[in-house]
Amino acid sequence: MERKIYANLVAWKNSPDRKPLILQGARQVGKTYIVNYFAGKEYTNSVYCNFEKDTGLHDFFKDLTPAAIIQKLSLYKRKEILPGNTLLIFDEIQACPAAMTSLKYFNEEANDYHVIALGSLLGVSVNRGISSFPVGKVQFMTLYPLDFEEYLMARGEQGLIDLIRASYETNTPMDTVFHERALDYYKEYLFVGGMPEAVEEYGKNRNPELVRIIQETILESYQNDMGKYNKQSEIPKTRIVYKNISTQLSKENKKFQYKSIKSGGRASEFESAIEWLCLAGIAAQLYRLDQIMLPLQAYRSLSDFKFYMSDVGLCGACQDVHFEDVLGNNPLFDNFKGGLCENYVYNQLTVNGLGLYYWTSGNQAEIDFISRIDDNIIPIETKAAANTRSRSLGIYVDRYKPAYAIRISQKNFGFENNIKSVPLYATFCVQ
Image (cartoon, rainbow, N blue to C red; front, side, top):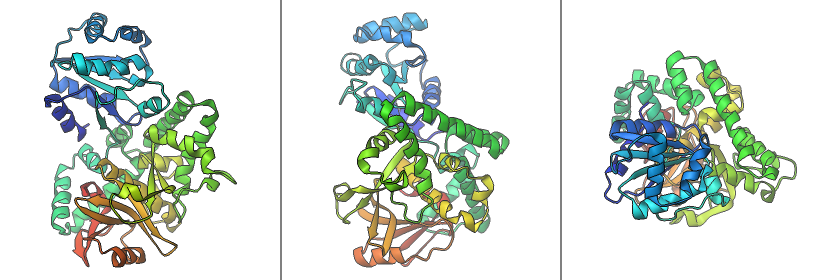
């Protein structure tokens, strides 16, 4: 399965300033697969170490001298470890704090050896003091679930991707037949999501029920992680908050409400659970902006936020959304489809590295996303359907006079009244 991060891995390998690499991301997004695939393509050989499954490896890191570690790993794995030709892969590195610390010494004393560390719950372990972190001695990359462009790649639609990108750049509508084909893929993606195993299963069998089984298994593994890598008192809170993310997306006001978790709920009661979910990479907060000024982060309201799941397919699975729900036009599903659509757009824009916020003006107007694109602060409005009439965007434009605005909907490409129309399937182009 082709992943866009592969080019970044090649650039890391060839960089004269290369440091040990930490590839982070939620569990089951494909970190182990892509790194082993990369190793097979770009290196003479590789040495794979999983610190969760093979706890005996921990003893090799009592002496943090890289030469000693390499000697023991070479003997244990029966492989010659060569500088520049062997890729050392340290998987689930959060399970071995000494291995985490060793990255500092690989950087300082043996940087000619290529090392990639993987961690599904790395943020949790570092934040809780479980691991000694080599600050400034490592490079980071983050792997997300497949975005929609990667989904199209997996479906063999490179030609359609090229058409989408060309239309995005020129604001030229696509031919109706291709526009509708891309929308059909988008609707599929709302159900399947971007978890590699789910994408692979649907590509093989086109069976939504088998996809749902995979999604439920992934959700169960997340629930297990909440129990395994968490304080005992926080386990039930973390689980109920995670489930509540998708529930609150069905509401018209999608600002996260503690009282919706339980009557009288307060931030102080659930803030640790929210932090855990964000550090684990399976959910993320979108903060409201108090003012439209630079730098945007300095003007965010820490008390007002929306909450999104890391994968739109898992978001739907949490609420047992049916395949027919996302493909059809059932008005009873409209509210939740709107929230699902927002979650999808948030995921796509996050993969592109955009810093995202939202904006409100009392009860009069709300803009789903605000981001700095190039040197401009751009409002991004999201609509789940083709109907694009919006009072909120008009209020924002009149007040702040942005260089242009983006409207993401089922409508075809275009540019009118200083609004760039982007079909939902082309969100991956916005960056």
